[in-house]
Length: 211
Image (tube, rainbow, N blue to C red; front, side, top):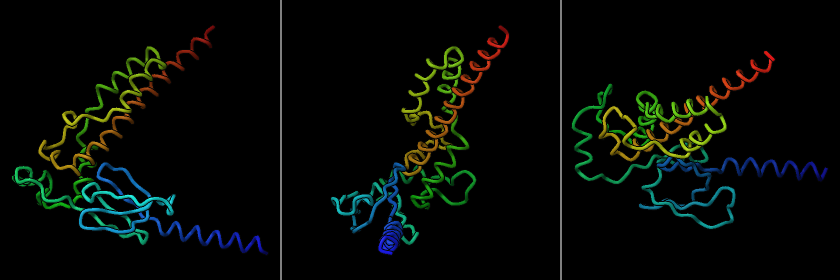
């Protein structure tokens, strides 16, 4: 009976802890499991969810895209006003396929639009994925070298191929686009390595069966 009560108490505490979890999403795309303690005009103070008795961490508001609170509500944080030149270049014309100008969108919309555009326009992965395919057809083991190299290196801004280059001046759009482009690049690179590995394996099996 005592063991049952202890188990029940532990379960209740565990559920309470899960419900008390906040998710901080940085503008880089990194997610932090936390318990937000205080939000000031310029900073967000929180404790690590896995160590609530530990130190208090402080993040500049400008580094945070949004917070998903324990009750599943979201709070989006806008960047401070940008210099006039950046706003003017983006406000000059409407965004492709949308009647609103990009300067009117929230930080979250910038980020998700960057991700969507990367899915549509990004093809900068082709040199890396082709190199991996060619090298891996010769030797899958050697092909791991360019594959790993392409995995750990982020796509360069000049290779992002956004529909309008001035959009990349907006940090949230840039981060969303680059993060999605990196996923696409990694996926294509390892897909080609897998194709080459499969081709080599098939060749070995055919040779072995013919002997």
